[in-house]
Length: 117
Image (cartoon, rainbow, N blue to C red; front, top):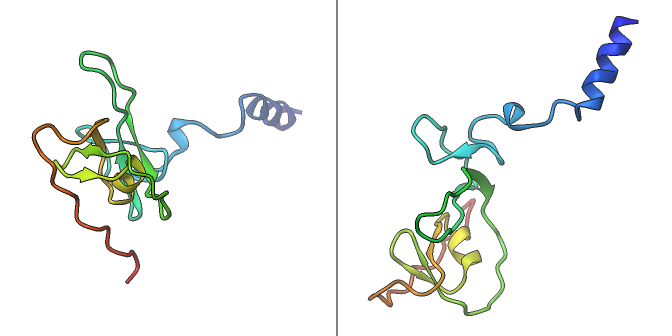
């Protein structure tokens, strides 16, 4: 009877899902702060772009895109390079710093090397 009640309680809470069940460095884990684990291979630490002075949600490990559209909407990466769109920056493991090309710079990012080879 106690086991059935405990099982019902766990199921009612949504199982064992949530931030506590995400392994450090795995997809969905917090990253980018002191003491946080580095993201695993194939992932990058995704930060949200917010206007200055606003609070941003914690960064989380996300999978790097493997296919990106060929749409030219230049953004400035946190590395100071201009990427043709946000997807291409994410594929390179770089966060977006500005929604436009980098101020005072028009340096194109190097091509993203193929993974696994």
